[in-house]
Image 1: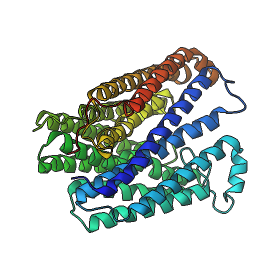
Image 2: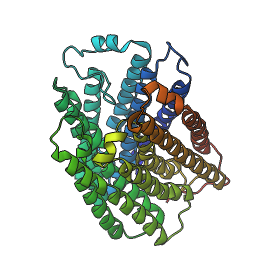
Image 3: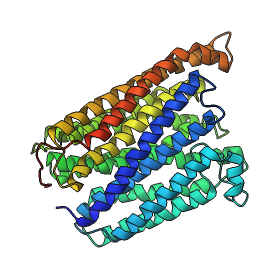
Image 4: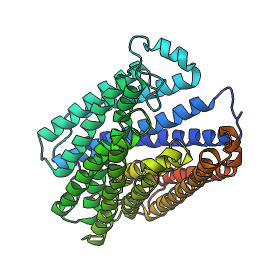
Length: 459
């Protein structure tokens, strides 16, 4: 059954895709600056492009998560959203705040931006991924709390399901752990502790709960498998996620001045982190194999299966490659880290947001699925983006291995810049793969504008 208030998800999805395109464009600019150092300098220095690239990633995924919640929760709760008007107001507030922040990064020197936005009152700026001005951080908290109030009130007056409860737990965790971004101690070790409580416990903790809930919701819809079966799998996955992810935070404590025992705790539990992602992959394929119906939205099913596989490879396998302390001693901060980050974010979070958009947008537009032509385009987009990301990861991995050897292991180590010159070929190949990824994304976007051969009424 479709609920009228689910329509508020549509602008969130549209904004998410628009910001995603922006993120990839800035990624391509950065990739070119790796090999053409003065490209767009001084108009767009590398540090600014990187800040915009990573912040757009966070913001568009948050838009995707919020849109997914607004779509899923009324259906799971079997009741209309508590306040659709509040959801729309928050959309425009969040979009305006995000746009103004990005414009600030681009057109105001960062030190000046800090002065203008109250950083002298409470210093929170200047840390990777948490570069947002104080007023933006406060705005994010206000938007997040109002969003959570809306979602929580909807769930309290309707049906409670395991999927909606896991989603809500993940969303509340997202908001709570972001509060540590306001804590910026002078002691560098303590600073890194709190910084990782935001960054790690987001992407390797509560965001994984959101991922599991979104994937379970889509799989119920496209396979027709009994909810009880899917919910049992979900319980197993989130338990493994929380146990390994929370203690596994220790793999970030190896070299920041923390006690030595974290090298053991971090290594052991980080080595176990691929298990929930492997379980997620088995879960997705198992549910599709046991499906009771052939859902017309084949593209959404493909995204669901791809999410499990790519999340396991990116977050699981590539995370494991350099998570053990004796290995991390050499690889920390190298291009191997970048390789892991790119595939992990794409597999675990980008793909699941694209999956829920692929499933929900046709229904929000009055059909069960897009036309066959549109779905063929979308599946081409899936393969182009996914294969391009695999090659981006492989090229960065090769660059990282060579970087570690030349700069850190060799008996005659090279300087950082001399090493970068030696591995520039891999950066060029990474850039070419990035262009193919952008083409795939544009095809994904275009698929929603292809007129159908016939309209299907949403089930």
